[in-house]
Structures are given as C-alpha cells and as structure tokens.
Image 1 (tube, one colour):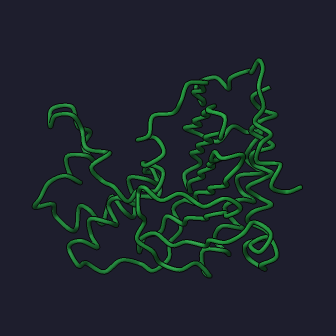
Image 2 (cartoon, rainbow, N blue to C red):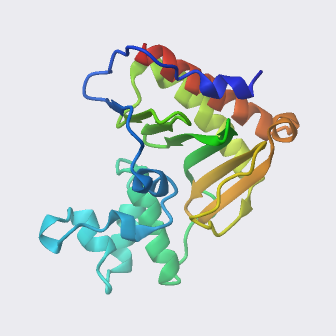
Length: 224
C-alpha cells in the first residue's frame, strides 16, 4: 500500500503554485534527472564563461581558492545543490570537509517498468519525476508542503547516518522491486538500496519511505 502512494501524482487538470512550480507532461530532460544527485559537475557548467553565475565561475576555475569554495559550501542561504558541488571541489582538492552534512535526498522507486523519482533538498527545493512522464519542479517549498518537507528532511537525516558511501553509475537504475535512497552529503553520496518491503521494516528506512510517500501525496493535492 505504501508503495502505491508514489503513483498519486495523477492525471487531469492541475493548479500551479505561482512562481514556485514548473510542471509539464513531456518526457523529462535526462539532465534534469542526472542533476538531482549533484555528482556530475559538468551538468552545471555554463555554455560560455560569459553566461556563468559567480558560483559557476568559482566552481569551474581550475585554480579555485579553497577558502572561497568553503565559504560557498558553508553558505546556508545558497542552493543546496551548489553547496554540494562546492564540497565536491574541496574533496577533489583534498581539503577537509565535514562528515555527513545532509544537503538532499533522492528517492527512486521502480513502478510498472518506469521510475518514480522524488528529490528534496535542505534549502526547500523539490523535484518530482513521475514514471508516467509528468515533472514538477518547486524552487521553494509551498506553505502547504512545509510540514511534509520538514518531516521528510528529519527522517532523511536519521536514515543518512545508516547509509553506505557509494560512487553512482549514471546508467544504473534500481531493479524491479527495488528502492534506492541516495543521500547528497558534504562528504559525497551515500545510499540505501533494497526491496521496498525490506527497507520499510528498517528503523530508519521505514520512516523515510513513509515521509517520502506522504510528500508525493501532498504534491498531488497541491497540483490538483
């Protein structure tokens, strides 16, 4: 029953949250999915240096100042994905980084041969990619979703402590019946992977799956 909640995004007419949401029914850009994990910096590179934001100029400077990168990584007001990328650059430079600071969590659930994906970040950004092709992008958490987002991030912090560090294969997807929970952290990606029922029974995985399913349900209600 819990797994079925991930399909509640639904069809039909929707009401968009002003200035907070972009939604479409076309097949999502593959780069949108890949950017969720913040482990492929090239996907954030501007088309030309002249078009880059200041954080892009810093991140893609081969001689980036570690102090400037650290200031960006520690900026609680910055985009969580940008912070993750900044921590990644510092790791490349073999600079010390804090262990396990959670910046985001990505749920991947195989459904009917497709993939439902929910991503939530510490700054309030949300992404939902439905296995049927619908996509929702929240740049800020709408007030109606704030309680669900807070519960989700609290559960994610607990589950992250039990996750194993991993190097993601961009081409790999969870197999049928599997759920993959990816944690975007200051010290790199970590993961929990297993059958839905098995993760649901775990002391940390169960609350996170429930929080994720409730978030998907709430997103569906906001969009109706």
